[in-house]
Amino acid sequence: MNTENQWQLTGSAAERYERVLVPAIFAPWAADLVELAQLQDGERVLDVACGTGVVARHAAQRVGTTGHVTGLDLNQGMVGVARSLPSVPEAAAIVWIEGSALAMHLPDSAFDVVLCQQGVQFFPDRLAALHEMRRVLVPGGRVLVSVWAGPTPYSIAMWNAVERHVGPDAAATFRKSRTGEDPEVLRQLMAQTGFRDVQIRGRTLTTRLPAVAEFVLRHLAASPAAAEVDALPSSVRETLAEEVSTALRPYGDGDGAAFPETTNVVMALH
Image 1: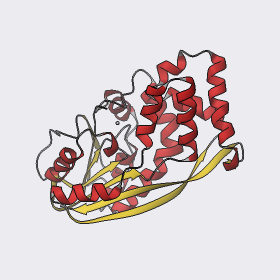
Image 2: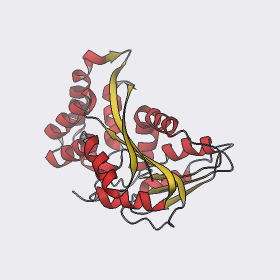
Image 3: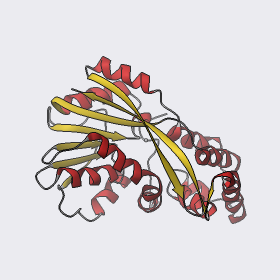
């Protein structure tokens, strides 16, 4: 999510991503994005950069059994986990496709809605991806793209600790995932692509993490740095986790931490 495969997860990391990061971080945002999209029964929805499919599953519930949902992601491991999860009851069937957002092998005008949660910052060619999103939308169809507004206390503490104990390359990957994308740039790119009525909506939620030191190690095991972290001595892993936990003490919430998190959602019509 340098290249389009920067956030490739191998081995069991994709399964851990679904178990650890989706409930704590991505699921609340998926529900918010789908709510903002105002999906209707019977609509056809494409979830671009679907990961393990949390947005697609929320969308499937909204469009019902008469709707259709497709999840597309370049990451083989993520798509494999998405396919392995149980079907959502009373919801649209979901088709999972391993493929690039820059060249979707999907028909023109095949979808009523395109959603993309926290994926566009990883695309090496945003304009190409937006052209593809517009191509697969019906005239009058709508697109919603969410991007983080910036880092959080947790992400800052995490990448600082990773840089100290794992290395600058691993830290750079974490920074890339949380770099605040300028929504105005996305708005201009959408207009350049031919989208109309482009709007930017700021959305803020409170993110709550369980016991932070433990969560940090589970998070790292669900990241591209998993193998590097696993190779560290256990004492170094523990020090890394404690450093993050200490940095989040001002945001203490029981045995965990809570802090506000903001995304910008760029919305437009075909």
